[in-house]
Image 1 (tube, rainbow, N blue to C red):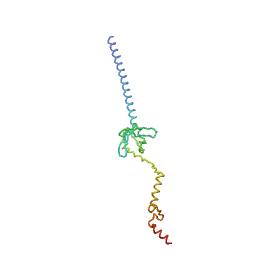
Image 2 (cartoon, rainbow, N blue to C red; image 1 turned 135 degrees about the vertical axis):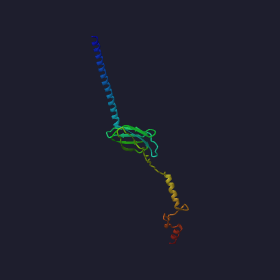
Image 3 (cartoon, rainbow, N blue to C red; image 1 turned 60 degrees about the horizontal axis):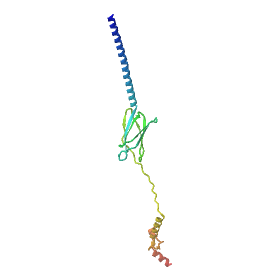
Image 4 (cartoon, one colour; image 1 turned 180 degrees about the vertical axis):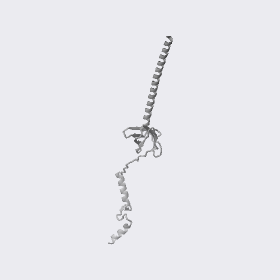
Length: 191
């Protein structure tokens, strides 16, 4: 009987070892499967988006820091960024495969906008976005004081006098109508 007992124990331990091995294999393959599914899910999420990179500059190609970059998707989703000191910006996780409207605004500059589409997993770099400087409109009001107007009128009247005190009413602005004062006086005395 001792051989039977020893054989029975061996079978028991081999069965337990086989059961433990099977349990470990099932647990390990479940963990691997879960990790693979999780990685695929993360990859699928990543590939459904893309990123947009760019730089905002002025007409002389100097960077514009602090400009607002606004990306709007067709479903109302929105991404925003503010340009850095070098004028650069980055919009991460933009929905791929749809047309977005991108708008750039900065104080003192005209707004800029365009349409853009990003492919899954793509990191699209835009050419430099050049903003135009807004035209400054200023109204200038010129006015004269009454004293200045009176002084100018007096000066104009002095120009129309002979020897600065005799009114010259016979002078005209047209050269062919000019009649000297003495000829006019001679004609009037003859009649």
